[in-house]
Image: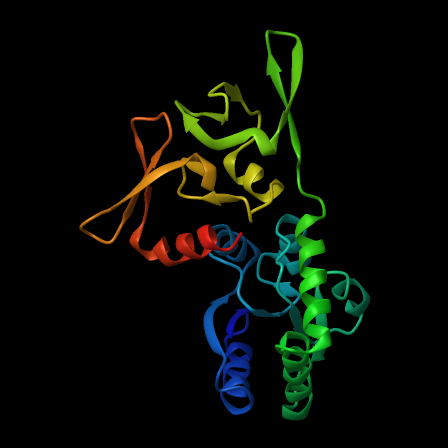
Amino acid sequence: MKVLIIEDEKAAVRNLTLLLQQVAPDFEVIGALDSVADSLDWFRNNSCPDLIFSDIHLGDGSVFELYDLYQPSCPIIFTTAYDEYAIKAFKVNSIDYLLKPISTSDFKDAIDKFRKLSGKGDEQHYLLNHIKSLFHEQHKTTHFLVPIKGDKLYPLSTNSIQYFFIEEGVVKAKDKENACYVIPQTLDEIYQAIDQRNFYRANRQYIITREAIDHINLWFNGQLHVKLKGENETVVISRKRVTEFKQWFSNR
């Protein structure tokens, strides 16, 4: 299981890491983030982990500011010194709320709860996956109102979009009919609004769909060069993101 820690106190990060080593040695900490800004950037460039341990007060603001911008699909165990945010926490995919200092027994109970919810063959496994599915589907943009011919707006369905891209500083979308539309939002805003199961943020210039891909070239330095249908240029997937891209491509 891959675990992400969002915590601005180094001592607390060390404590959580030690507790995981004691209670759940099969869990892997893949990152420790100490701010809303760094966390948002991380989620924009990485696949969601299996579990998040999250403090509430970070150096640059409340973690709920992060979850207002990015809604992770995995369970969250909150770890905090304040008890007044429990109700709000459970509205953000939380499965437990641990008060600092965290005891080993409380930590173990939280891990056991997570294992039961994610355990294969368990009735609750189906329930958790169902909740995740619903969570993914909520609040996702299905249409963009795009300006055309001066004073008209056209409802562009996300189902018809092949990919989003930036051209000369302007964000555009190309649909399956090869028509191009200007989108009055940034790529970051678009990516957070759309269903990320169907779209992939390939790099700073492109958000693509599977259907847009003509073929993929393996590059000598470990990169992937994705050739889009009807386009001369290729979209580069960096070596460090190849595994993530392949997982996204196969997980429909």
